[in-house]
Length: 176
Image (cartoon, rainbow, N blue to C red; front, side, top):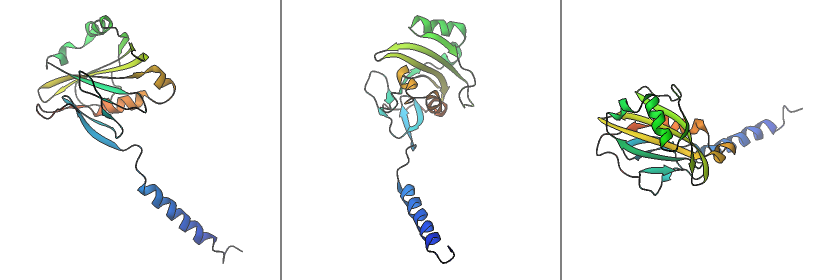
């Protein structure tokens, strides 16, 4: 009965049209490279430069902000251990804890998770100390806890950005 029916031909044509529509649609997960101070990142294409005293970028949809500060190279060896966690506590960070192995990185780094109070209420903070090219930097990524609770931000999204972080040679970094 369907042998002489035009249905299979119509279904194939419809699938082809749908495939063409989706292939021309912009990718919601497209990534771009951004240099923020001394660090380059791969971020979703809706991140943009943020105003402030320190080089930073922000994504409105998730509330995620990434701030970068340059450190002396010896900080790679000094920003470790219990003393570093205590230092963070003295700076208003609550519950700082190392999260070793959480990032997909092959270089030496220090990674700490903490809570803090921000202008929009409680925040989740992710601190990465990394180095390269004779330089070192501290990256602080954060978002309001409410953005994590409502699903707009995720630890996986923040850690993907931090996993892509790389210190660039002096002169290559610029405020976005």
